[in-house]
Image (cartoon, rainbow, N blue to C red; front, side, top):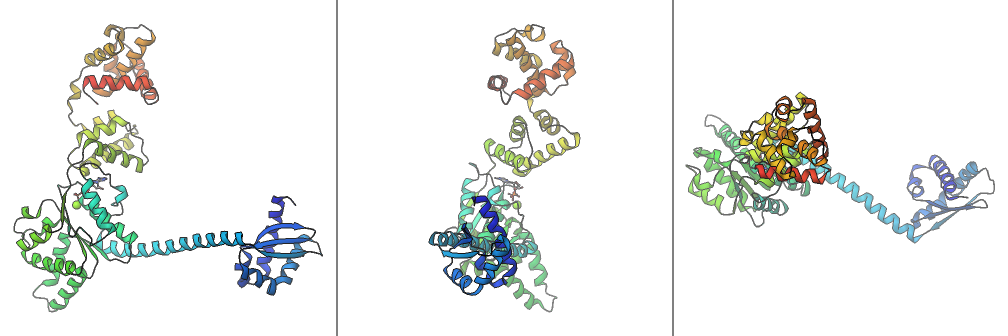
Length: 462
Ligand code: ADP
Ligand code: MG
């Protein structure tokens, strides 16, 4: 019997076996492999010695009957052989299966933990380490946060991350939370905005409340019966003197039990007016790290990641334009990106440099660059005359220079095709054709991309 035929034949027999044998025999039937069918003898191999014995002892006759029904051969017999290699494969498979199931259970636990957390903790699933772009400005904060996530209450306790708004403090802090939830689900993590902590405290400590003491102890249990606390925007505690006293209690309870504390702030502790000296020194006793605005490279990477994650095709120059013009704050950088996407979607335009410029109007002074300057630099790059670009000469070099000059005129000045056409003495459809041609070829044609880069550099626009 050919191999394929043999497999098919065994498939039918196996199906028959599973339908006639009781359920408790099935675990011994599944791992059986066929090794041959010759002169009415079906040879089966198993990696389970016990399985072989059970099948032989208890189900042999039923198995032979099933085989007879499928083969139509009344002299059919079955031989079951125990095989060590099959046993090894089986062991591996079993381990793989067990690992998978364990992982599933593990994930389910983590998810349950997560949903508990999210209802009370406001965690944003986007804020994970994988989604945080690392650059010069944030690499220390990132590494420290990751170290804390991997080893809570280890070297850096408390971890105090500070920096201006929109630089990724909340993102990093919640990344710690998510990492622990997914990798160490036994630990209880609590994320709280300082504002919520303060409001919660005020509600529970109201004097006119008869159950005040009970409420306060419930409140304190909520914030101290945990393994990792993430307190966001601590500067909000400013002038909330009573809450500060309780915060010190929360801090000490956790710290003394060897629990991890992570705090963010828009400034260093000593710049928070009215912060008690006791809290100030507590916040400063661990590791304090500053997040600073990301450099151009990191901003560009953040945008590129946003584009990729959202399956959007952006012209590279468009991303460069946004990255160049939104340098102080990642939230604003993302906002600019989203705005361009929204306009592109509404207007059905491509995500191009021209669109980004038109939408964001960042007032870069590249609008002051004239057609004349672009044509001049392009002509000298190609060693042709500026008159040739405006004329009708069809030489290869002139044509290439003209197309590139037209393309750059549109990209850099964002002027209409009609205006550009007037300058080059051409029909506006000719201008559009030239523009589209370069746009299409610029990424695959090295000479074109090199020319664009050099001319832009000479014009001091990216
Ligand atoms: P902060 O808490 O410092 O005000 P956030 O953590 O809320 O800032 O960050 C603002 C936005 O910028 C968020 O959407 C965040 O995901 C994003 N962001 C900040 N830094 C980065 C980074 N390095 N990589 C990717 N996204 C970032
Ligand atoms: Mg924040």
